[in-house]
Image (tube, rainbow, N blue to C red; front, side, top):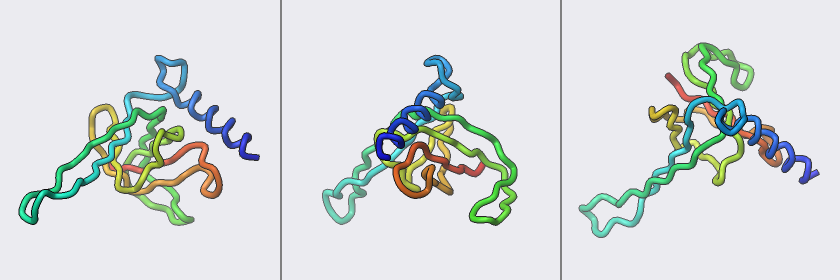
Length: 124
């Protein structure tokens, strides 16, 4: 069964690849993670390390969505992306065509077991 999910993840990666690579992906989408190092002393802020990963993704503007069976009316973007090199976290940010966006909801697809893609919601 594990091979099945690996095949599905590969298929999602191919389908969501950028258009110039033959996929259906749109624009440029990146995953951004900021991690804090150890501060050198008590009064100096900790140094930040910023990492970004390019995603094979598609972006869809929505004005309402269902989440956990509840209708939420809010304008934002639903970003569907293939499994990246690192597991996404709710504290990460998405960069959509150069604009940094905060992730407000992050769900693996399927929600249990091996993820073959991810769905993130970013408020507009």
